[in-house]
Length: 265
Ligand code: SF4
View 1 (cartoon, helix red, strand yellow):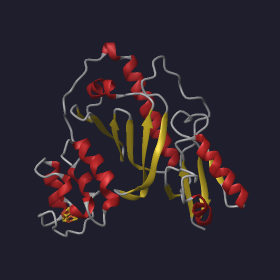
View 2 (cartoon, protein in one colour):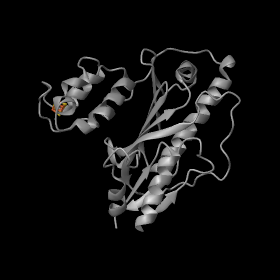
View 3 (cartoon, helix red, strand yellow):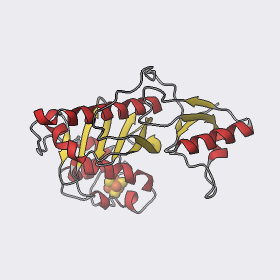
View 4 (spheres, helix red, strand yellow):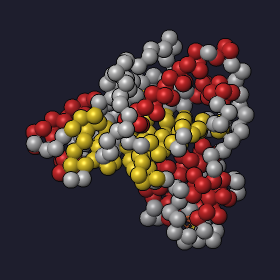
């Protein structure tokens, strides 16, 4: 049986979804972020294709979920301890608004979370300490790799690409929450920096292109196009299949990575 997982920005939507699956006697398993990851997500539901169809929106009164991905059991456990409290919480609570397969690696997931706090003022301090990160003060955006996961931070939004599964997504968000709040708490000891040092590689742009080498952008290959976008010579919107055609589902991920490297969209 194929299993799918979804999560929700609002706990009320989770409760509505669970009640609907229970009423139909559909397959149902709950994956909870409690207690360790409770500040960065609401519970997730695992079900089969029939359960998924029962929750697919058909009107204004339907359940609003963040999206669906294939279910994979987590390789890490949710911590049994409460998440640490911070004296000054500039991150706030995170809500996962988008959950989707990662277009850069279909064995992994992509998620977008909105944060209650505005993190922009922390970026120069994070940039001073995270030498491997890329800071674009004009965005502002702050991008870094957590091993193979790519994290793009905006003032009130975080995009995580290539997370293993939902629990790993929560772990990643909790790691960011702690890092943002800890850095802000120590800001008096840190010299803020607007320096832009490293950009994620051009290959990360290439991974988010259709890879059909159709030449509609004027380049011979998608890889050549990715390099020119990365170098700031072409805007990503020249890829018409993504911006106006049948590969529109790649557009958000492509725009995210372009903002992370400071490239034009
Ligand atoms: S238009 Fe897009 S899909 Fe076609 S070659 Fe250029 S980058 Fe690749």
